[in-house]
Length: 273
Image 1 (cartoon, rainbow, N blue to C red):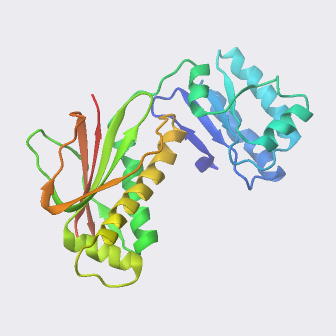
Image 2: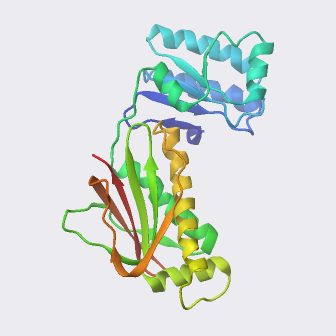
């Protein structure tokens, strides 16, 4: 059950994500799980984006839960851009019973909270997990992250092929770079495409952008569930023997070194000051 609860790093709110496959039996057992978390004195967001059906009994239960929250001066905010759920609320006459918004950003406005920009392991971990996931699923390559560390001003990290993508949010900006030696990248892209390549060309280099975009998408979903509000962005590719990239943000950077069967590479995350 715990995987359906995501608590923000600053412990201000709890997100309950309603999944498409939740049936009546699940809701019955879900009540006790939510009840225990009320005592943690958090605002609650109900994320209905993936919900196909919500039993009316559960709506009634959430009204009781909302009353308990109000006693603690906390709010329940429903994030609904799902027409099926919206229609059901209206049909049951419950659309005025809850605070309903369309986006996570709107939900944070309701509780007067702005997620703080923190470039730490909690922010970096979704990119770490995304990198391992994408390489495993797309290229059948196992990879392992080394120790995450803070980049110093005089540190230079070199690669031959780098995918770069911007982190754009209402509250902060930054960049993510995934950089490969040529031999590592050729092994990764060969495994992805099912054909051995021994030299780079433009079509293969585009693959670095695709890999970066998939890793970014994986991390973005997790971070946005925590309220970071990261927007879509397009990747670019930089190639050239033993190049080094300097961020224009001049902010704090974290570096995650990786080892894999294809070779070593690294991911760098930078947020503006």
